[in-house]
Length: 310
Length: 298
Image 1: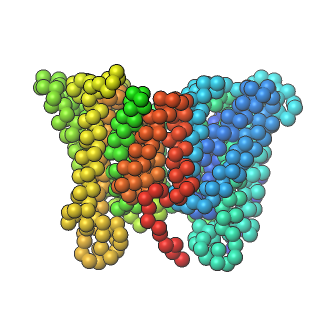
Image 2: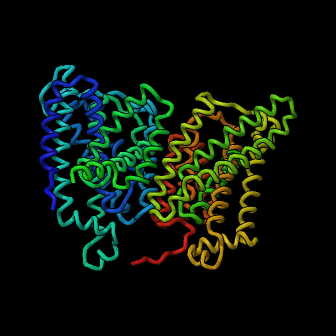
Image 3: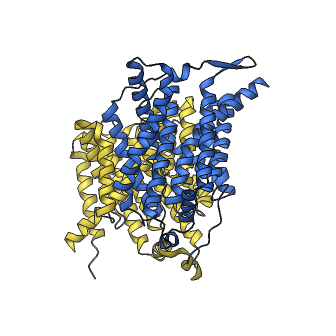
């Protein structure tokens, strides 16, 4: 058996990114911070995909996390980034714990559509709530991290460093989870859930727990994205945002916990380039890339890396 | 009383339009098991083509009545070109994959078409008001309604009846029902399943384009109109039960009337109510109102 190099790779990635936090130019920090935030959401989505479920509504928790974090600073007057991240994650987890009771009973296209419906409900509420800035959303500004007041200019770098540490920790936990008892049950559910039930395991419980975990990650990603951008708007909960997450998940593949982050970084990088040079064909290139991956690389870009090293 | 009547009428108008969209979507799903996200792009293509054709017709100095023919021509044209193009060019290579993967493939097609539309027609909005204003208004009590809305309702009813007739009363329709029921057995009995798929997808595309063409006179045709339509028609189809024509009609009526009540009495909740209805129906009946029970396969 080939040795698993995921953990060393994680450590190296963490060290490199932490070194980049104070040194890299502002634009790169912004891009990487956004990629990490979305990578967290996609990591959750990948967890669901390993269970055989595709959610077309992760925007619900992404948007909720972003708004929860932003509102804490904007209305609650608590402009502490660490608390905002906790708030975003917790709100998403609580909502997922409620909706999950229902959604864990659905599969395939019905799961996808119902989660889409829930995300559109949030979008509908946000668009019409003038107190929250309707379609424009509002700006937020975090002034401290875990009680330490930050001077202007370096705060984004500090948030980025925090997201590096947290994302690597989450990725490590997910990696361990994948080879744990429940992680393997998830894969079995994807293959044939009726047989899993016959063997005495509760499919419902596994799906439920995976769903809540995935959505908590989406909320965390949303809070980080809000911190990185400094602005929230209803677009975060729109179905095209959810579609983007699904795209990134497919781009990376479900083979490894690092794949979502890698794919998110590629995605954000390409988007930056496309915005500059070819804004009119951006969606078209996304569509073509998606078709190409589904046809020729069903395991995502990660299979390319694996092929070379294996 | 008048108020209520007006709200109901608006609801039925909206439902008619929703039904045209949903009927194509549900037909395609019923036969091919594809939930077609690109349906929204076909709708947008229908609207743009209608605006362009009718605009050219008026520019050439013909009578404004002819624009109605142009709307119909746009729907037929878009369906006849895009249906086979998508089905033969893309989807036929994908049959047999998971439903969710097929959903993603049509999502990719949607992304490609969205930019194609922008490249062809640019980003400025197109206006085509003649077919809408030409027949004038009629009165219910003190309120005036455009006659065009009556035309829309009539077209939806006629289309629905025509599709139902074709499905249940003609030989081709019965072959199609056989394919829905059991694809492999139908193929074994000599039904040309490929042709049924192609025909279904083309007709479904025409219905989407018709929905777009008929809406074009009432709105400003601009980029992104397809994006919202998709989730709306998804909601309708899922409420009714995927693959059921009657379900699509009932779902369209429910969503349309609930929406028009919300718009009148509680405008902040417009979008909320639509998806709320969808979520409630799915909670009560996980596969929609009209759906046959399915056996779980081991």
